[in-house]
Length: 152
Image (cartoon, rainbow, N blue to C red; front, side):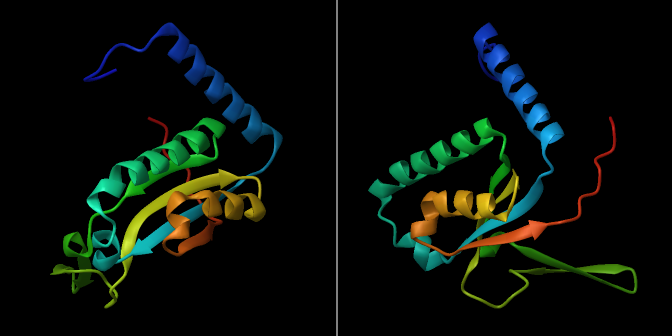
């Protein structure tokens, strides 16, 4: 494990077991991927007292572990702020880069998740379990098309 302690044999068995279960689940039933996004604003994030952030982050990490372990969470990503966003438009072969989000709005994407689940009902159930869902709207979008990753 780069930058950390070597993985224990038990941890290796656990990840192998999880990989086996995921492969078995995929072989048994078709699944659908969903994009889950949480939007917020600078005001939203600043309204959370500093002393509440550690518990909020711990709750989010527990959510991530729970659904990574079940094989239903493919990825969980926090995004930069609206000040970090860039919009790229190519005109006549020349890229033009501007600062800020594409839409003129106060809200911006705070984080996003990729789910791989049996059906929409399960995706809704998991999205509703997000700790932030009690603070901000959570958007769920099906991802019906996936380009296969090239073999490396």
